[in-house]
Image (cartoon, rainbow over all chains, first blue to last red; front, side):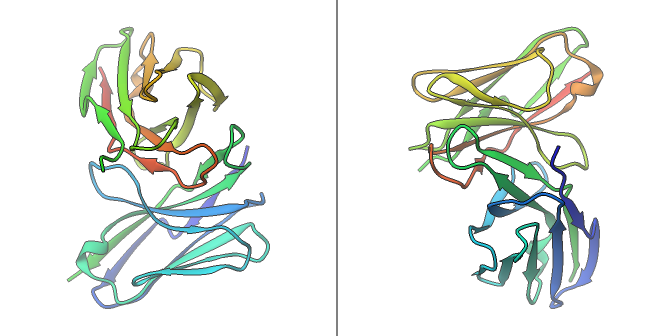
Length: 114
Length: 112
């Protein structure tokens, strides 16, 4: 089956630093989604990417859909303590119908030291 | 505008028992999916429901079954519980045709 390799597994940074994480796969995806999960809660959608090469921002977050359609990265600028959590990439194959299939990476645990 | 709601939030069951988890999709959504998230892992797809039918299924045994009701709400049933079924069960919804999936806060199932 499809697998996503998400790295790094964990990061420990100082407040104010920039963060970068990425996902790679041997499979092609037609949409990339990035989620954040806080303890005891479900994943919350941060950014959606729909086209190869697309670069999208959401506040201090920036994500890109790789040209090969097999990878994506997420950057967080000027990190703050509330950025702490687990970040997941998810790649979509199929469309919006019954063939919709979303595959998740294993997550990047981000810790921000105030 | 209520998001995806799940009940109960926590549940403790004994090996061999059966469990039913419930989900109400986000307002305006008609497609519901269920995911299992083990500790330290990403969510794993169980199945997807649309128009009250199972449309797609992940690599989970038949002990996992579901249902979708006319109001789009859904249930996940797990029979003959195993210790390995202990996990966070996430419900997610979207509108048919949409590409973004919205998650509830999950039900934490512990099997002893």
